[in-house]
Length: 148
Image (tube, rainbow, N blue to C red; front, side, top):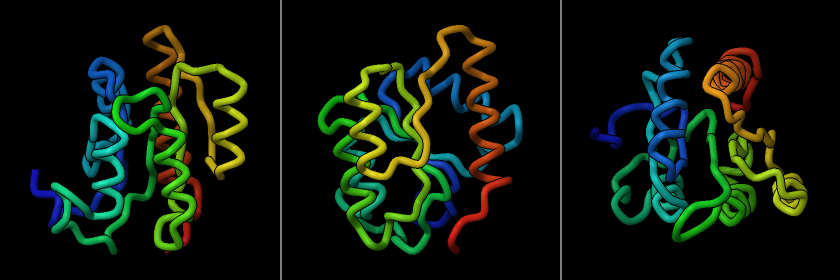
């Protein structure tokens, strides 16, 4: 995929292949996956968001409308990715939804203290997972008004 030319609406940051596939299928179900880009760890996410490394040619002006972010990932965890997004003037207004299996109170507190827009614990059962992702996508990409 040539990420230099297309507008990305959803950046999915998920190391679990199964969860990533379910998320993508769920968003396709409500026609919200056409402009989705998936990265597999926090380091790759930061490179994409800030147009560094393999994504150095990417247009920083074309930022995602929504970032779906897992917490427990290799290299750089979701909390640190969130911190860097929210500390940067160019990216701090991008809505970030933590979509994680972690119910740890410290993860929830840290996420909200850093400015996460929503914290969602992934439902274990398939139907619940699909429903949660569809609702998140519809809300953040269709209903919610964002800064342009």
